[in-house]
Image 1 (cartoon, rainbow, N blue to C red):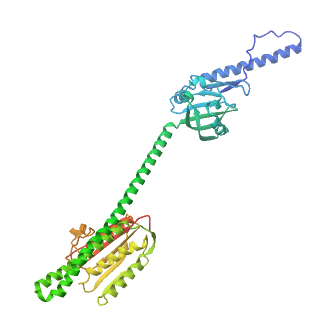
Image 2 (image 1 turned 135 degrees about the horizontal axis):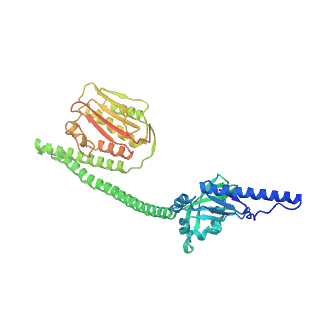
Image 3 (image 1 turned 180 degrees about the vertical axis):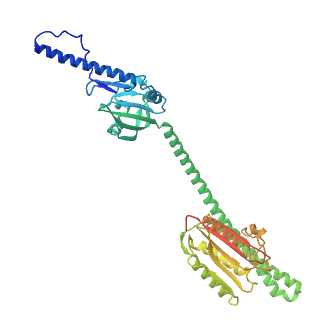
Length: 438
């Protein structure tokens, strides 16, 4: 790029006549003309060779930029195809060049923008921000969001990127404006969807809370309504044996006894079902729990219940978890009592509590015993309510304990599973949420 002060073209040469002083002046003037001709010739050759792509003519503050169509053709092709608006701005804030996209964003032709003030592109409220972004030096840049005056009195939100560069001593700014209309519409749609989703969640939550309250009321109602006839059955069977026992034969007294046993078992099943329901709905208060200490206390309780049994407990120390203390204690209590029950016929019974490593959890605990075990093919039934793999005559129970364990662990974000073999003992595993403990 060349810069010129637009010299006047030299007139035709004159003969060197007159006094010696005058001849010296003419000689100097002739030398200047020759120098200007050389400069013009060099400029023409530079233009021909591609060394100059534009001319800046005029005194400071009144510069005019003339681009050579052949020199900047690739640049103009690229700028003309841009999805963003682009403009070059003079030191005084006048638009020297603009691409068609900027014209379409403002509802004008690009040629109409040239020579106008860049500040006129921006609504009054955004002009201070625009001016601040435009105030960059050569080699510096700035980015920010402003509004652009759009077609028909509308405004267009844009991301403005400004870069300053030096053009032969003149500071120019290059503006690139990205239309954010589609982004704003998408953001508004997302906000509307989020609002709708939050309303749906709140509605579903209210429905769920109502359903839980109704279920709880129903559960207590069923408990009360079923316990009353069961108490009557048990009471009348007691009265039958007490008052008419001498008139009943052995078979009759056996029937009465079976009525009492069945009534008691039915009452236990109702209570266990209610307990399972409470476990599924109870609130969770997470805190740090020393699970090793909890298992140790449970082992002591089991020994005190049956002091005649000899069972060796192995408990890994220092197992801390983040969980609801009451619920997680129920988990290890169910598992420990299960192990205690199914090792009742085993000499040298052992029960172990420890941890192991699995890929999907921060902590995995297990309770292992060397008791009766189970058929691995039936492992899927273990955690189903009221599903039992052993007859009640062999080992008492209702089949609710393991179902409670599974629901509690699931509410803590973990999972449960079991391994075992018939007469080969069993191991019950449970994990807790991976981001809770490590």
